[in-house]
Amino acid sequence: MTEEESFPFPIVLGSSSKYRRTLLTSWAIPHTCFSADIDEYAIVPSGVPLEQRNQSPPDQLVLAVADAKSRAILRCNELEPKALLITSDQVVCFQGEIREKPSTPEQVQRWMHEYSREPAVLCTAIVVRQVGTERVEQGVCFASQLYEGIPEQVIEQLIKEEEVFDCCGALIISSGKICSVECFVLKET
Image (cartoon, rainbow, N blue to C red; front, side, top):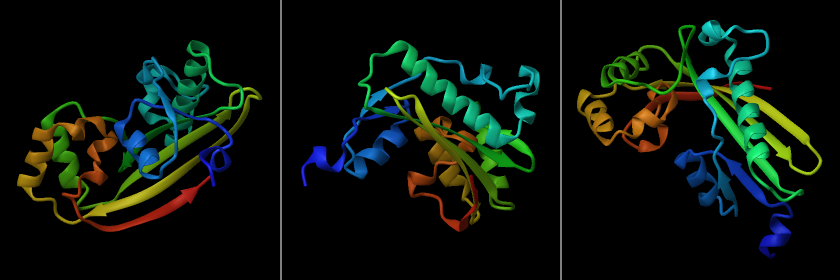
């Protein structure tokens, strides 16, 4: 089977995330990448005031951001009409708090220690838009992750490597340095 037979639509990943790019590449899915030049922290679900952004329902927040990324990429780029544009956003929910990318090493340490006591819930939205038709499919998935006690030296190494600052809630699942006790999908919409 040729690449065209396998992928009849050009795939456009609307993300600056190296983790999302690596995922598609590891699955041998040919794609191009565009980043949405938007301020994600200025986006809120419909009807939610900006100052209450972090009290938004997490599924509505990630869908609003993923959709805004998609629309921004469409506005700023000439894409093939039959292309599928894929955008995504995620947050971590912990004890009712929405956690995005950490800003300090102390925040990373506190969060990682907390994830050994109680599960972190990752909320992920994906928006897939067929460019020429404006057909849109979207969904949200919640997954829970509880970690074994994360040794302080592992946390310090992750902070030193700095990749943890690119991950919502400081959850750098792909590092291979952290062992989970349990992980399961809670809900898909």
